[in-house]
Length: 100
Image 1 (spheres, rainbow, N blue to C red):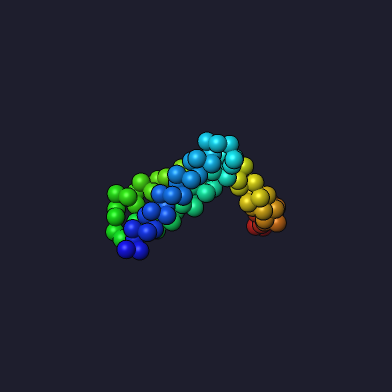
Image 2 (image 1 turned 120 degrees about the vertical axis):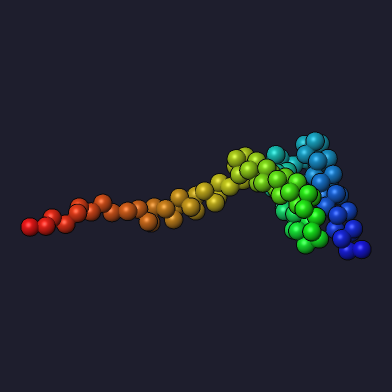
């Protein structure tokens, strides 16, 4: 019973996001972000229930939408944080010790 409710909720999320995107109420980045969340939740549901073919399709959908979100500017804040962390860990060039 709970599984059917979760599948129905996922279907409503997908249809709703498609309608919002086509009507122009959300951007491509928002659409890809919400679809990533929905497909990830559906993949987790499929894994718990042992639906392997559904798991493969939803995992592929989640990966596709995560890639679209990242490349449409969704990961800009994450990129900035990673670059600032990388600046702290820049290596120091050292010369090899010279043996006498």
